[in-house]
Length: 193
Image (cartoon, rainbow, N blue to C red; front, side, top):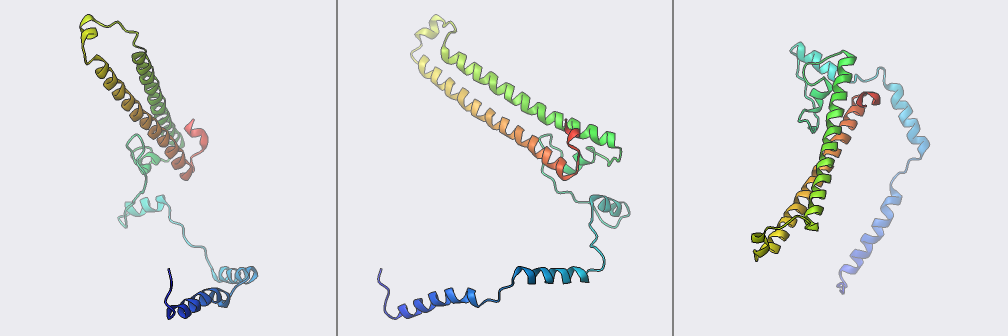
């Protein structure tokens, strides 16, 4: 496309400015940035208070605020906050917390195992149906739509298998989510075994 002669000087000027502006900007070297950060840290007299969930619970108990927990739902349907606190009232007993985390981990792993077992059985059923080794009655053998019905059932079984594969993936995601939640809450890895 040809550019009109009036806009050529403008576009050339814009291109030239685009190249010159970054070089005109004041640049700071790493040493200058480090000095500024050191000065800023020297001015800080006391560290900032980090608020924890316990502080929120204390404030809520005193009536000065409320606790809001943000957590993704897990496969069991409980939120991260209720699971971290033992599924109900807050508990400080480490053994109770460990039992709660272990129960959640076992439940999510069992869900994966059950989903995989169901998928395996569905695949076996499909393979057995495809092999067509089951006896056919005389009425079914004479049915002109027998092959179409068979293909329709095979398609349905394939769709069910694909849906079950999705269930397996979701169950595995639930395990990964639980492990991530445990890491964020500082739960020892042995508690999930």
